[in-house]
Image (cartoon, rainbow, N blue to C red; front, side, top):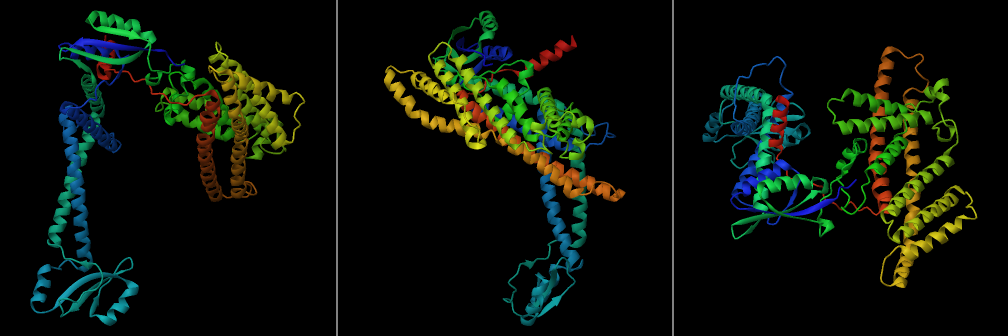
Amino acid sequence: MIVRMKEILLFTTARSVDKTVHKLGELGVVDVKEIHRPEGQVLEKRTEALNSAEKAIAILIDFNHKRKDAEQGARYIVKDPKRLVNRVLLTTKIRESCLNKLEELQRQLDFYKTWGEQTKAEDLEYLERHGIYLRLYKVDGHLAPSLAKRHTLQFFNGKEGKVPVALVTKSKNEKLELKEEHIPTIGFDEVRRRIIRKKRQLLEIGMFLKDQASKITDLKRYRLLLQDQLGTQQILKSMGDVEGQLKYLKGYLPKDTINDFKTIAEQENWGFSISEPENPEQVPVYVKNPRWIGIINPVMKFIDIVPGYKEVDVSIYFLVAFALFFAMLVGDAGYGVVFLLIVLFFRRKLPIQARSLIYVLSGSTIIWGVLSGTYFGSEHIAAIPFLKGLIIPNIASFGVDNISFMMHFSFLVGALHLTIAHAVRVVQFINSVKALSEIGWIALVWGLFLITEQLVLSRSMPEWGHWLFVVGALLVAFFSMEHKSFFKSMLVSLANLPLSLISGFSDIVSYVRLFAVGMATAAVAASFNTMILPEGVKGLGVLELIMAAVALLLGHGLNIALALMAVMVHGIRLNMLEFAGHLGVQFSGEAYKPFKLVYTDSLKQKNTRTD
């Protein structure tokens, strides 16, 4: 649910402002809003320091996997984190310079391998002084004969379709219209020595970075400290000022943290005012749900949406619907087992919420796959007597003609989904006449459902079905808008009603994608099986079985990827557009981000564990 917030205005003296901000950070419940845009040299330096630390951490993480377990002791020890960051960044620049120089030296070495180790610029200069000009090129093999007819050329052994050619001429201006090869300024032996030195230097750099990769944890703690320092400076620079004597800030905090804030404020002698937010659009949104509902948070963060402060938290509705949509769109128990095994294998690396969500999604997929008899798209597995007895024919993927029922079921899911949206709005407006308009919309949704069934599935509408439109339209027309003029409100509602009905009809029809995509997933899986094993595994040798297994792995891997893409496109769309549209949620909110000193808090937790 969306936690109710309070707006605060806090005053403190300029002398104690640093301590005030530090205490606010320790409290960690106030989302501070800018009164002035924070700027200044100190802020720039702290931002630069944080960015440098993050770059250093990213560099060391890249080298961390290159460390060998046998490498126990560090050869290079840098204890100061700030100095370590500077060393890592400087070392990286040196490494890039070495790589560029090594690439240049390698090109020079390739030149000598092509034209000979004894090739020297002095020899060409000697020939030029005697009126003979020698120019070196690499030409495509098919161009060489035509060039030989017009110029005096000396050909050498070439590689990769390129033929080394020396143009011999007495004219200083005679050239080929090709890129000329230039002799390096240093000799072959010196090029080899420099390559060896650069490789040795790169080896030393690599050893240093691998050693310092053991300090990633320390650097991450240092990054937390820099984040705290930057956050503190941003708050200080964004505060209001009264004649250099008084500082003040504005922010928001959850209603259930007011007592904690007041306790600190009284201890520190702050002046403050707590009130209801004047502008709900500016209030940050703090969504707080039970742990079992919170498992949907990874999806909400992935699509980066937050409901408005006065809107409805859709987490629980999203979770239930998304689990169903995921099951119907993927629809294969075998794929569900694959998801389950993957999360079990990587359970220690996955966050708790993400792990729990995948458990729910894989479980719902397995249940749907068992009930529909879908196991990697194989009819033979579904025909096993025990598994066959668990199949519900109306939703089975193979062996029955149930297209009409599955389309009906998809429309029914859509109507129920949209009904829930309007039912929530009935509760939301329970003390307003607008609740009656939402009841009217529930009637219209079911009327549109019956119309959809009639137009798409040729099912006759019941005689009472027309009354759903009559009653629904009247309730929507009379009570959907609150206006001083009753007749004006009614006319506006009636004018908007036709387009709303058309939109509602298309919303219900759009739920057919659950059936269509799910059926396509099963069909593609079955097609891969048929193409790879048209006659089963009988008579196949060991090598053929291995090749078939690899082909099946690739085929079903592709199908799983397509199914997951369909979930992201269709499963999320039905929640975010169709359902949210009927619920009136526009996701216009800004997430609640309280100012909190993370490094200080981590030290407290560490000391608590030590005690």
